Image 1 (tube, rainbow, N blue to C red):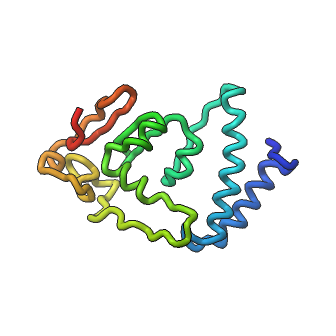
Image 2 (cartoon, rainbow, N blue to C red):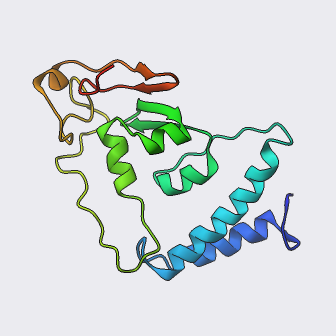
Length: 170
């Protein structure tokens, strides 16, 4: 069992985080922020030793605020399909796919005075019966007739930066 800073083992730390998260009342609640900070500290300590011990891990999350601090490379998926992949720095400085932009706009801040942004409009498609063409077309602000007919291919638009969107120029 892994030991975490301060002598607490990983299982005890995990249980403490879960107890904190039980009082979750939304992304702006104090319990959520405390739980998120505890998880971040535990993951960051694991991440710090990763390069020395030649470890890799797959981290799956909808919270790109956490992904930004933990990952070197990022892949964004929508309804089971890859829509964008790039290095962390490239993706966060220049998001190309509309879904990636929406996820970044949804990243919560610790500023209690900030207002949540209006995010995506449109109907969420049934994952068991996705729409023809681009799976994001029912929610995309840039949708065209081509998007509704033809699924975009994942293509490289810059070195190491790939995107599946008809609206993004090469």
